Amino acid sequence: MKNYILLMIAVLLAGILFSSIADFSEQNKVSVGNYSVYCGDLHVHTFVSGDSPASPFAVLFDARQKGLDFIFVTDHNTVLGSEIVQRFAGLRSDLLVITGEEVTTPKWHVLALGISETIQPTHPLNETAALIHAQGGLAIGNHPTKKYSKALLPAFEEGVLDGVEALNFGPVTEGKQGEVEDFLSTLDSEGILKNITQVGTSDSHFLGSIGDSRTCVLAENLTQTSIMEALKEHRNAVGFNGEFSGGEWKDVLNEKAKIKLETHVPDWMKLASYLLYAVIVLAMLMLRI
Ligand SMILES: [Zn+2]
Ligand SMILES: [Zn+2]
Image 1 (cartoon, helix red, strand yellow):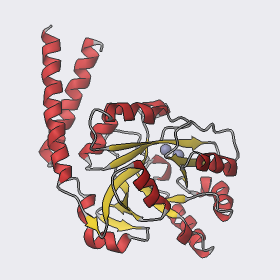
Image 2 (spheres, rainbow, N blue to C red):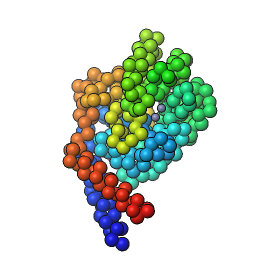
Image 3 (cartoon, rainbow, N blue to C red):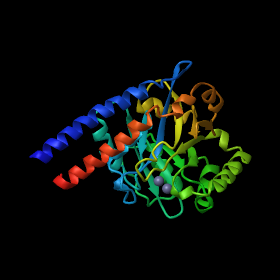
């Protein structure tokens, strides 16, 4: 009984803390003309992927701490993870969670953004892109290092992919950003790069890394329709390390929206949040909830 009271107090404190974090993210609103600037992570994994320990609660917690406006949850070969995170996010409405999947095959990975039904990884790449488009989604070629670019390049040349991960901050590209840059140069020399969307993602598999590389869009409002429309029309740039790059709007965003790359959460609050999160997880384990 005593343990339950402690857990209830911890949950109450977490609620107060989350409200404070929301207030911090309220401070970094930026408008450009008729658009608002919204920043998000287009490539986030949960435990549903099988290679990430991140619970839905942890994903939301981390995304809010980073001051993100939206995330696409993109587990390997299923939309289930994004549906679960959406359920949790429904408790609070200031972070938009959009359904997605990372269609994962041995030769290529493709982000299916904004789809609603799982797409099996059993189709060729061009058919997969067609299945994504049939659901109103966007198909993004992932981490085009040497290993994956061989299969991705023909798809870009055929015009079946909508965008490329110009910056993937996950384990696949560690030490291989040079290979990605080479691929982007090839797309540029073939006149393809200007016709597709360049995005930055964290490919987060661990608590703490969501939003380390992000994509900021100029959209009418914070809805799935507006965010998808902005990405389709390349109204975006890649945000990383306090700077915008790799997108048509990078200069405007560097001038007006650098504040969107800061989290505005004080270090003491980050530390307190992580400690509190650890206490809640421990309490849940002890109580076998
Ligand atoms: Zn991948
Ligand atoms: Zn991934």
